[in-house]
Length: 398
Image 1 (tube, rainbow, N blue to C red):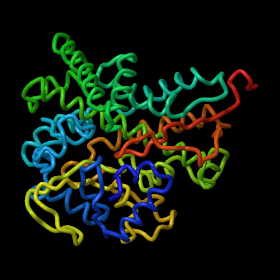
Image 2 (image 1 turned 180 degrees about the vertical axis):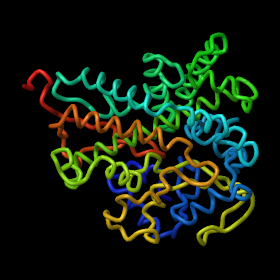
Image 3 (image 1 turned 180 degrees about the horizontal axis):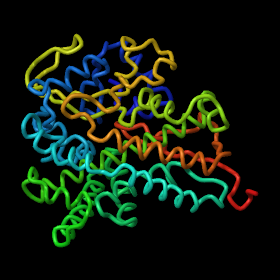
């Protein structure tokens, strides 16, 4: 049984998807951690089926049979990403719609022009901080920092708190031994902000959630904050980093840095097809015995959404890169009631971050061979651990 992490940490994830398809078809049995298996749904149409049929495939992890039977221990590293939480992610039907409304309303209230100006300003400030060095890590110094500062600002967190959240989230998404501690620290920081805003409301999303009629208590407010910040941070970091990687290594896009034919928007869309911000999304749980993609699914089985694999489904496209340019039929944002609520602000942050860096560092180049780039360990995302680059130092420019 192949580990799920093999689809995110190997040099050629599409090769892994195709190998799994030859062996299993469009629904493959994979290992989440030693002794814990789940179905990886790789078929485009099969993924649409499980995301749209709430009455058969639930988002509520309390239905997970392996957890009910004690095979998955309460202290498992999978917990922060897969265990049930009393929030919009863990709910179905009317309860999900109630908890989704505050998030949709909060996203709709974002002033996009103001946000773009704010993101551009913080990008310039970050670049100025390393421009004189003539080199940087575009992940650690930039791609991981921009979305956290942008999202933290929306909620009223200061820069220092934003960096603390970043460290906690990195542990959470790693689903390793420190994920539970990362999750605890994450919620502690947000809990402190929540208490401060309860005493002194402000014009931010924390106060918006506290005042929203569909959130019944502070626990629901906290969990709504957890969802928006955690999902927005990790996915946007990955999107920025993968876009840089593509534009600095692929001749079709690398030429754009030096006046070529394909631009940032083309790169953004190709990343959503080839290396989506979430390669694998946890999870749905079968509410009864059923069949999917020719496989028998037992009641309580976990099904992981293989967003990257579904985008690579040969029934959807023939594999030619040009087919994806301008085509946004990908499943990078998932589908159904739990579809991502914020693709527009995510694109705004990502596009602004990439364009600002390419404008201010027009001669930027990778400092290592592209084959040396490796992803940060996670079964869920495929974010480059680092992107070391060099460029002419600011003081050396005429």
